[in-house]
Image (cartoon, rainbow, N blue to C red; front, top):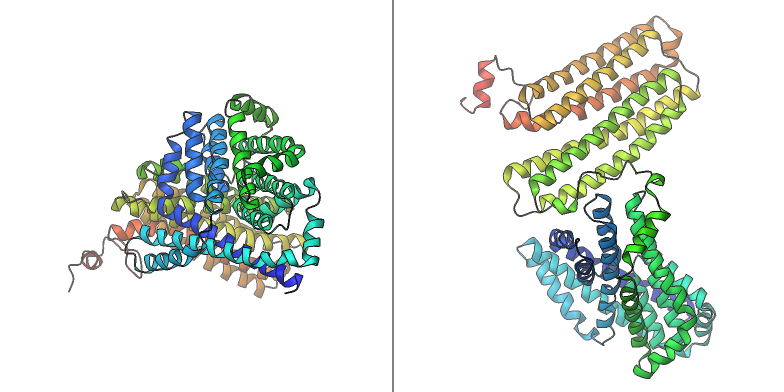
Amino acid sequence: MSTTMILLHIAGFVALLLWGIRMVETGIVQAYGSELRHFLSIAIKNRWKAFAAGLGITALLQSSTATGLMTASFLASGVMELVPALAVILGANVGTTLIVQVLTFDIAAVAPIFVLGGFIAYNRGGKTRTRDLGRVAIGVGILLLALHLIVGTIGPIEKTAPTRELFATITGDPVINVILAALLTWASYSSVAVVLLVMSLSAAHIVTPAAALALVLGANLGNVIPQFLGTSQSGSARRLALGNLIVRGLGTVAAIPLLPRIAEWLAQFEGNPAREAADFHTLFNVVLAVVFIGLLDPLAKLCIKLIPAKSITDDPGTPRYISSAELAMPSVALASASREVLRMVDVIERMLQAFLAAIKDDDRKQIDAIAEMDDTVDDLHNALKLYLTEISRNDKLSEPESRRCADILAFTINLEHIGDILEKSLSELAEKKIKNNLTFSAEGFNEISNMLRQILEDLRLAVSVFMTSNVRDARALMQAKTAMRDLEWKATQNHLDRLRAKRAESIETSSLHIDIVRDLKRITGHITSVAYPLLAEKGELLPSRLLDKDDEAFVTLAAGKGD
């Protein structure tokens, strides 16, 4: 087999390994995600409990990155302090080494058993959790199979001179080794996968023991990168990532000069090069935990000093009210989600005002602002969608709470659609108006302005319906939809009259005017949708139109008393 084909096979099998790890992680999260978050939330007062929680959760998830992002969300929401959060990360770093230790033993023969058992559980499991655990078992089987294939592919490399020379060149310098492994870990989002690959290379004597240890160091260092990037602009979460980077960075710098001696020392206890890499991986993280568990207070102060509060610009797209710690209490979690939705409403309101300013003053800065605010709406929408999905999985959710969860999600989705209309359609129309130096007629601009003002009023009324479930406001909101339809029709007819009168401004802006009016009507449809569930629940909504309470026939029909 050529060197190119060998490398291609290795890349494919590593991808299979990553997929197996991913299946294990997602299966555990789906099966026990709420319990894990609750477990983490109650272990935040004591650094030792926090350390144990980080170790245990990561041992199950096999992803210190997932544990780090979970901890970062607690920290950003104010539920957790920085010191216990750093303790969780120390525990997570140790926890991620456990699966590596297990996989140093030759257990590939049981891979088919895991896959078969997982397949049966996934397809025939009556309960969702059984299916999720079946997914975990399949993931473990795929992981073991991938390792077996990697080892089988790497074995012949020892006899292939070009490939050996390639790896010898790449891994000749310890600093290059660290950088290379760090980049591979960043790209794969899995230090476990990179360490397992290093173990396979070491077992086949493709890399020297010292080079294998340097690659392990790089995998540990590279594991911090996705954690840092995943914190976005949250200042408190960036401090957590910085603390982890300081711990791993100092450990890496201190270990690099000692790698030859450490390799010789490990060789005295282990005759297996793969186990030497695995033991060093565990030893490195245990030593860092022992050294830094008592230094977390000064480390936290250093992180706060390096990223002071005054230099932190809170990302408006970062949720402020929802917290994973509240998932065990659905009523509290739903109330927090509702508060977060109101932030989306505020952003949508500013986007509407920015659009009006853009077409009134030909201000391109307003168009840029709309794009930025739409990113905020998208971020909040994604966070709320995941949060509400977690709430809906709670077995203790009552029927009213389940309906409320669905209503919040529906309103959130409609707000996100409004943001898309403003950013992808209306902003482009405003840009076209500015670029071509076009001017609406006075009458046309007033019609658009009136529609925008009406939309802002409808949006506030929709908030009232969303928060209070007031039936009278819901009926008023539905009537506002009819009123907007009339405004749209009149604006279109008036525009056509101006075209027939050959008004220059109307001719130039004809397509812009009609498209804007159409989009504003679409926005109203998304706003008024919040009234549908309430009116349907109260029996005041017919398939074709709003029920007129004065019409006895419709009352009878809605109550199910008709023939």
